[in-house]
Image (cartoon, rainbow, N blue to C red; front, top):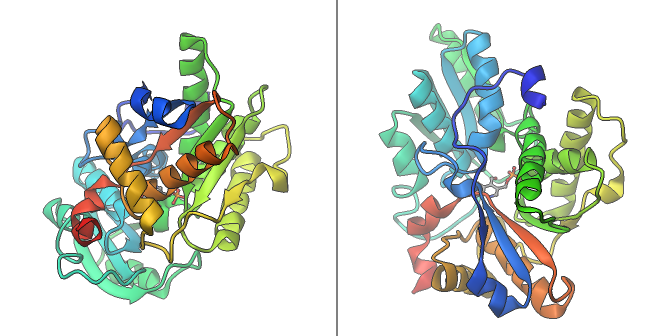
Length: 334
Ligand code: PLP
């Protein structure tokens, strides 16, 4: 339905697979499924940004822009997906790669996401540090530089989040999930997702709110700043709700952010994160990363084991990608 109102280019294979995680379910005493947005695109390992960028890319093409300009951490999955989208659309790409975290490994700046972005022809500018949802001067400078060189930049903020169209992809995800539920005659009353720059969860909040049957959506904070994350998710959810003319208001309590599994800082795993990554790999061959999905999975596992997620519940784990960063974190698994 959103597709009829907002232009979208196809970049992924949707609907993304809905997969029962049988061995993990048995281990945790719940009925656990994954929605595999990590394998929903042929574009350089894909991930959640492909779903969002389908809407921003349509806007960029409509405006006649020739260069996608974005920003993220050195091992950002987002910037790698922007590079991929630029490559397939025949656009140029400039990426500001900041130091959001200090991970002490000489390969961190060479392998994984940043290697792939360079391979796809993006120009990577290693400058700036610290994660925040503020608009960054480094990003403004990169945009200005493209203009000075005679190009027409399209500005994509960190995580494709703080952008008028940023929430559309995951609002639409909610419709896609509802369709899959109807086809299989089941319903997920609990949905667990990683959350950071906010438009994944923000979009879902809106999409689920539009549905009749309520569900529990739990965002596991990965920014190690749950209040900043909450503000970002809430802002994006409200702006998206207004844009699509949702009849119901977004309430503060619609945004649930769990701060307990973020580890010591953004991009730094703790023992629980690593244990969750090993468990998913060894029981389901499902690869998760130390920055995002390992943390959301650690949260889900802890809540199932403590009974916060009741035994027997039917739970959806939304897998948003991120495994291309694993090589940069080999030290965490020694
Ligand atoms: N999971 C992965 C693999 C990501 O790359 C990101 C990006 O930040 C997230 C989760 C969090 O999504 P969002 O930034 O939309 O909150």
